[in-house]
Amino acid sequence: MKVLQIKGCGDIKSNLTFSEIEKPTISDNQVLIEVYAASINPIDYKIVEGALKQIRKLTFPTPIGFDVSGVVIKKGNNVNHLNVGDEIYSRVPSDSPGTFSEFIAINADVVCIKPSNLDFIESSSLPLVGLTTIQSFNKANLKSGDKVLIHAGSGGIGTFAIQYAKSKGAYVYTTTSTKNMNWVKELGADRVIDYKTENYLDIVKYVNIVYDTLGGNYTEDAFKLIKDYGKVISIAGAIDDESAKELGLNGLIRFFLRLKSKKITKQANSKSAYYKFILMTPNGNQLNDIKSLVEAEKVKPIIDKTFPFSETIDALVYQKSGRAKGKVVVKMK
Image (cartoon, rainbow, N blue to C red; front, side, top):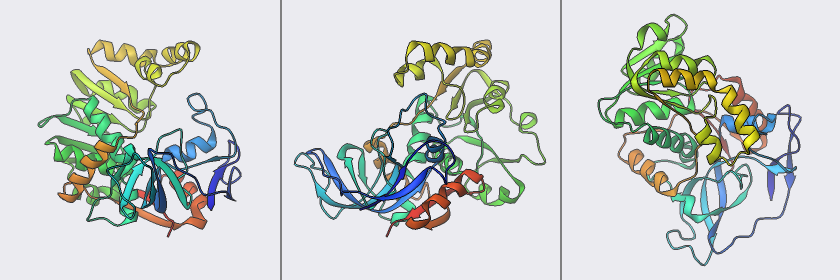
């Protein structure tokens, strides 16, 4: 079967290659999926570039890709909730990537029947952004009436997060560029801030939660915006000590991470605030929650562009460009 593999860390185009390998076999707890679509996420190109070497060691060549939709063509003896022929979607575990391939073996507990009102391309766009958002807002204990700032409202995470927060009854601030203002408003955001003409620091005040998707200064500035005892949940900022332990990082790495996040820790303490770095984990039950939200038309996928499998490398370069409005998807068949 044909598969895209990482052959080394560095430049995207120089370190990815298409290969022919054997079709995977499955264990009693797995299903074999014929891949119909696989969406791209920033973590994909970051892994190629080596940005996650501290928390994930690679042995080359290694497969790439985490979001998938397709059809079950074989199931293990212990799999009861899925059948051959089922149309599914999943976010595969970090230790078994490879959705940019013709077939993939996946542990059945992280696989869910895809939403009935979506096609394969739309379904493949949801797992990572949906699970990341649900797990982030669960950690923040999001509730109706909360005021929330979601950075980068036109991105893959942002488009899902706006809709999800509104479905929970939150008041949503978000940031985007001038050209994306209108369609981001249509997603349900209460106050859309044009970062090219407005300073969000002057507009957003006393929110309960900041969902930080950008990192850097945006993480530090979040503490200027939250109420006392507020929460800053980040998928791009410094790794806090609790998250470092969850990732199994050794003591020396955790020591350097504590030094790196010292300023954030000080800011959080000044407001008795909670800060958490989220690294999403696959979850079949939460995929089923996403399926329910989609079928109830409370959340819809936003697709920016679709590439054929043969152009997956170009799709990763496009994702890195930051021009995408919503998700970038690779159509496998």
